[in-house]
Length: 299
Image 1 (cartoon, rainbow, N blue to C red):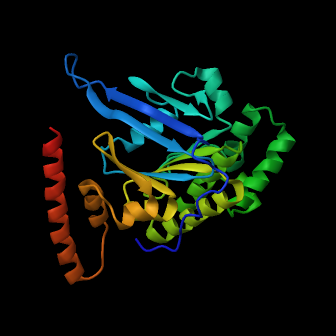
Image 2 (cartoon, helix red, strand yellow; image 1 turned 135 degrees about the vertical axis):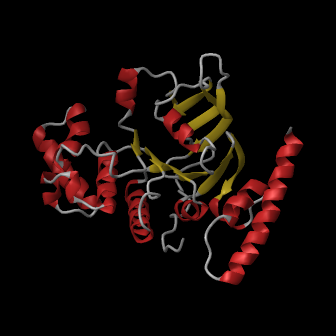
Image 3 (cartoon, rainbow, N blue to C red; image 1 turned 120 degrees about the vertical axis):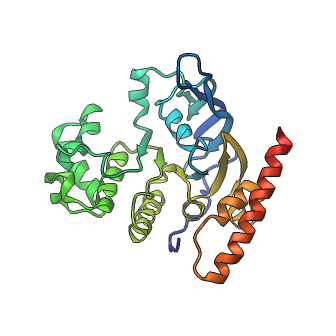
């Protein structure tokens, strides 16, 4: 993917001990098919940290468990064991009332802009919902909605229209505005550009970077595309079959990956030119063989 977007410099106000989100030994499994089927282990003791104002890119192929991590942080799947804390507050044991209070600091942008918005509600009603739920008056909500629409570069009259009147990229801008409504400190971005065309992807990525520059919000940026993660992230964690196999600065991970699986992901990105495609196929085959030998060595 070709894009001009790039992550902002490493946030200067965060120190090694200044952690916003912390996941420790997070394990998740799902029931198997049938009453007697064994549970399927999805996460095998995942550790990760995100500092204030930082983007951690979480990358892996389909089925690696990356979306499950995001859902665990959001409280949408229970943990078998482990802890998840946000600014020192436990998320994994938080009840509904506590979760609602913590929603000021933790929000989400989902993958599909076509299904994440209620088609029967105007954009203004959608944006007003979290504001009124947290005690804002109608006048305060209207003023905040105008501010939010301006921040995502949509006109004020968008508040009076329905989702079907907007393109996919515009709907994702609305979803971003909704996530920003309460001024969160962390947003889980679950494949937020994968359903968009390449030009719109770049626009949305630029918008997310612009918002981070002006608000210092942190992102957990989940994607299967290492080239997108490289543009968006300060650090990258690579997830493979429920295990973090490599973590480091985005530039290092995407330029000089150490783990065979990371090299596989990097070589999976599309390239232009028949000769380069042929060389890429050869390198992919070699990387796949190395990854297979590494997996066999762990067994």
